[in-house]
Image (spheres, rainbow, N blue to C red):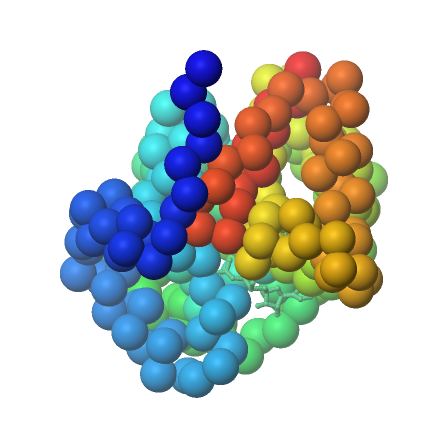
Length: 218
Ligand SMILES: C[S@@+](CC[C@H](N)C(=O)[O-])C[C@H]1O[C@@H](n2cnc3c(N)ncnc32)[C@H](O)[C@@H]1O
């Protein structure tokens, strides 16, 4: 049986250099976000963005939802995977980095596919359920304490066979460290266990960057 290899610093560097094809606009967005300082840690890794784009493309998703826009890298990548008539609704409870995100969406010529909503994620998703606004792809990357709610609401918002991708599901490796018992780590740990037992879905937990849970609603 093949075993999971350990991803040390050298291999991480290799993955970042060889597992990602450099893109001028994405690289500029990453550099401008990095210059913001500590908040830059919130941005997804470009190799995760590349993965989001290809999943949206091969699943032929047309209606996508994202919770957690920040400076707009994940939105840009999801929108790149969409066809011309595809739509992404990007939710964030802050408008702080919206102008920056919009600048890069325009540069990448995906701005017409993205609708930005400034709202609390749980409230916005509940309102979409009430309005029967369904999606075939959902990316979750906002406040970790609400992850269990985002997961349940996503299952209500997804069409059959629809896909959910959740970021940070390995949480810097802390999920595997019993000594880490803070609320965020325990929330993610419990959600991983719930997903494992949940017969409403198929899933795969991928060690790409901080861990992506890849879920398909049955
Ligand atoms: C990890 S960042 C998202 C990174 C983004 N996906 C990217 O590619 O750069 C998390 C975002 O979730 C937003 N957020 C936090 N709590 C939220 C909530 N309750 N509802 C909606 N958005 C929230 C934050 O404002 C922040 O921009």
